[in-house]
Image 1 (cartoon, rainbow, N blue to C red):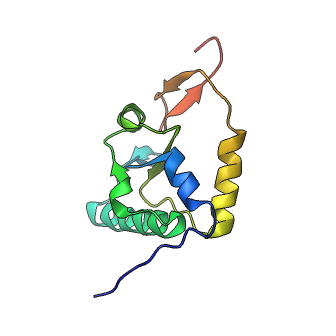
Image 2 (image 1 turned 180 degrees about the vertical axis):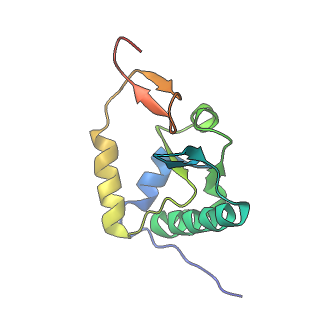
Length: 131
């Protein structure tokens, strides 16, 4: 048995306090054949890797990485200032410098209105009046 102690030497705690972390299984995309699903065994392994690197990089308890069925579900369930949605296989890697960069990016965010679009392989936000 091993024990892990988290040392928030950077701004990991600040990031965790302001960001809901969600894991959503978005389909893969091939420009020729369009959206596709990966095999379950690969999805499980990619979800494990994303979880490991998120926990490791942000000194986050695994229980704070939430699963959601869709981007809409993740956004609806979020309770913090920001919602970070990662797909299976997305990785963050870094220690203190990553937390400083993430905090800087969060500080640079401004209020935005728009509509979540899902007419392509991946959801995106449209901020134009024509949306």
